[in-house]
Image (cartoon, rainbow, N blue to C red):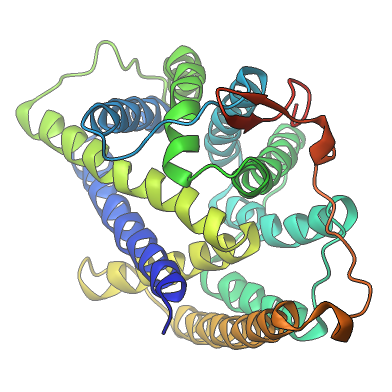
Length: 343
């Protein structure tokens, strides 16, 4: 097994473990300790992530790489906005409709990548995604109460989330920056959006103020723990999207959903039905199919890429959401995109 494959497996495992851990921690914080301010908490997550990466950079664990400021600012604002919209969607919709919103992210991402990136998804991949979505839908979707405001918020949340995740992958590959370098530069802007809007969003959703909440020792302790786990969550998110694809990250997200549902039943004794069990099993089968077909297609692509030029047909160059490389310029020996390359 190559070092690249080990790196991908490691990033996937880190993402799953940290995401499940933070769900458990936040469940205790929100459900048992009565701290319902999810958007504000997310802003603290991003702020702590930036501070941690800043210390790591000062200790020379990684080297910062200049990225066009307009690209970073717009990317950070977009991601911060998508988080806020997802929280608003949850607040103004039923749980069932919110789960449908999360399910819609995969087909919408596939559609965007097909239209704008000219990426081709095989019939096998599309079939496995359909099986996955069916299983998660059976396991997690209950009521589907609709309302106009909630539907608009959900559509905006889907659009911003998909575009943000596609750009996470595109920027890393296009500008040859690591997940750490991109997260380090964009985290302050994501945090700023949520720090400015979080208290208002949370008060709108909970009719409580984050500023007047009673911060007991257990509450503060779980907030600190949640922020520390979030460093790993945010890092692994950028790492997974950068090394795989936005669609793979969404598939992984539904695996986390199944694990959280299973954990809630076995340890927290949450209500569970045969429908949940059947849905989880179907979803796991869909994930297995997706993994099998993805690995097979990756190996096939690697073999094709290793063939001599004379044995290969005219390969199509995969276009990106950015301008051609001729639009780049050199600064301090590093190729940087022009100001409007990703904006």
